[in-house]
Image 1 (cartoon, rainbow, N blue to C red):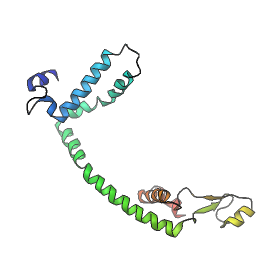
Image 2 (cartoon, rainbow, N blue to C red):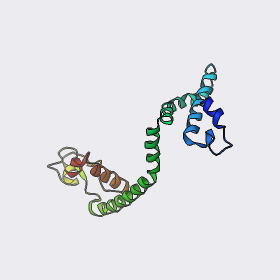
Image 3 (cartoon, rainbow, N blue to C red):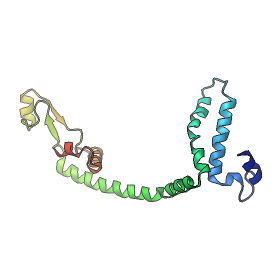
Image 4 (tube, rainbow, N blue to C red):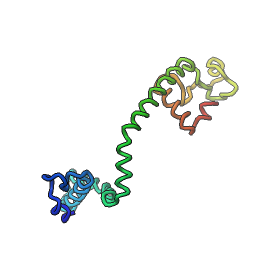
Length: 162
């Protein structure tokens, strides 16, 4: 890093060392590591932040690997499009959560004793049970969002279906 820093210059010229994002990341990681090693004997709580920056050391591999730079750069450039898609999905989920509230609000309950035999609150409480709501329901928009996410991820949809 030192040879590259001397040969390219620090920041003044167009192609200088800190004008490249990858070199700036490499410079930050190396200088924070040097400060951490220099202040290793001190027991100050603020220095623990520098020790947490050790987790960034594997990122130096990216700065030296051209193919990895290309992949990370493409991933970072695609974040705008991904956020647009997530926004559209959130609006669609909001629409279906509101429809779910209109159709199913207050209907996802069960009896704690026997949920297949006791189907209403009155008979459940008469039998000594407790009338409880399922974890995934459409009683409000947030729970509707969570229920729709579970169904769309195909992970816990049989529980909601039953």
